[in-house]
Image (tube, rainbow, N blue to C red; front, side, top):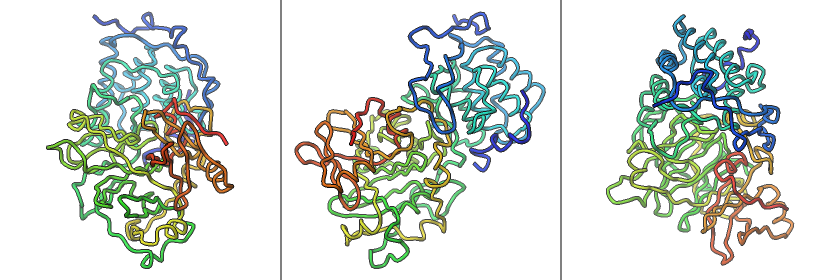
Length: 472
């Protein structure tokens, strides 16, 4: 299979702007009847028809053969994004393709994300299709998505040593990533990919920007009267802490994606993942003795289309959806950041309900207004997410709630809002939604507020697959 020049636009869409058993073909393990997934029960991203994939391909067990280990090592040192490809590299890829071991497709996918050689990418597409049986060149989202999505949906395992190979490959491009790729943690490194930007490695309250998604620390704010640049229908993220309120305009959060701030006497970090439509507030002022306040940053990495954030002080990675430290010293300390509710509303509704609110100043947008939600991301995820719970459309906005007993509920935002505006009750399993400042807040049966935030359905459901869903 050859890649024509007309396919080139799909090859570079996501980042160039953006006693072991040998694994020969005779040793391949066919999926058993309990794990033979056909993904027919899953809905699919707009870029991929998962329903027609069929059973998972064959994959090996145990250690790779010495020949395959040598082949992978010959490829892991290729400089990312550079036009470097030799006959040795081609021979190594042929060895991998001939192995029939679909586990190696994860490493092929990583190379496909990084390679700057058209010739090498052509061979990577061939090998990826050879290992999986999927004609990835014809995927509407491009070969990288065409390879990654089914690998995730099938839950193909990786091979022993995969993380080391991936760490070496990624660290050539961004040396600061090396310590983030930590073994033995609650991170599925198969699903981690490059988001197309550099790491934000700046210390707290920097005076300079960077070739990254630059976080704001301790942002300057203005009053309602001083804020003339926002239109009443502009979307903002509203936060209230100890009676103090602040608006974070989406125009700014689209550009910055991370704020470290103080409000109502509390320190917090606020990531906004544009890809999963989720803004959250994590308190950073209640950590174990001897631990510095975490300063949250964007790593430039993603996991199933969700931002991977880290603490620039300790280099610990946090789960962006839960606030749990999953690698590094803060994971050793068992740090779990508590959250505050983030309301998604309009500037007009928010300021009417909160006339004393402050708001970030226009200059923090750096003169940009991307509106990724209605442009870049309008047709579905541009990064691999794999299988998606079919109960709601993939990018349906939901209000996600975690109750005191740990159970989770998703309330479709638009339907909930319409019901409330019509005077109806929105309630499920003892959790009730109410309108507040144009946004939606959740309360328990005793009337106590429960922390919630809005996100795309695919993101909420992949982190909380057992979530209950409210129906109008």
